[in-house]
Length: 176
Image (cartoon, rainbow, N blue to C red; front, side, top):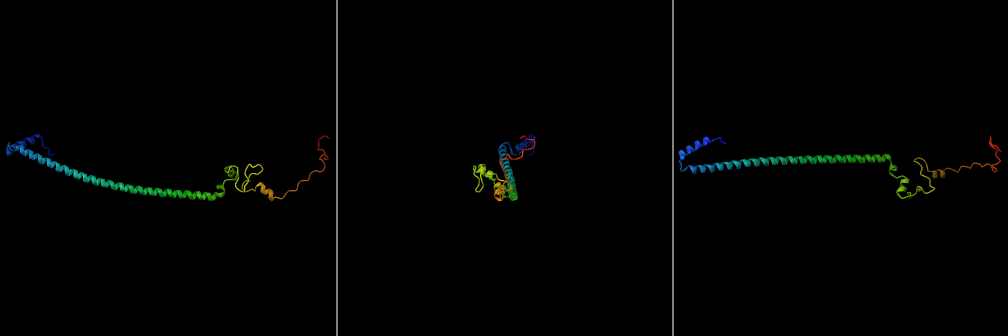
């Protein structure tokens, strides 16, 4: 602390011995030691209080940083949630647009698929597929065979040849 070596201490002890005397010297050294101990204790307490104040200040600064970081994190989380909601709305709008463009017919199952799903029974008003004599549904835009048969008038039958068919002239190159 004071950078005093053994030589200086010996010189100081000799001076104290001469000034105080050999009888009072141990009591004075003891008192000086007590004062030194108290001074060191006060210095230690002062240093400790300064360190505690610095730690408290650092802790307060760290708390402020944590609070600020939490606020930033909450803002970022809110922004991410808003962005995700916006993306979700855009996807739902796009899906709705696609469904409107495709029309509802695309979303409805075909009669064959409905018949398979219903265990071989067709939806009300439509023939079941595979019922023996029912015609398959016509592709989109073309009327079904049953509809065309009902809508078209019956064509006159072609005239059948008269006789038993042996009166016909033999074909060329055939022998009789």
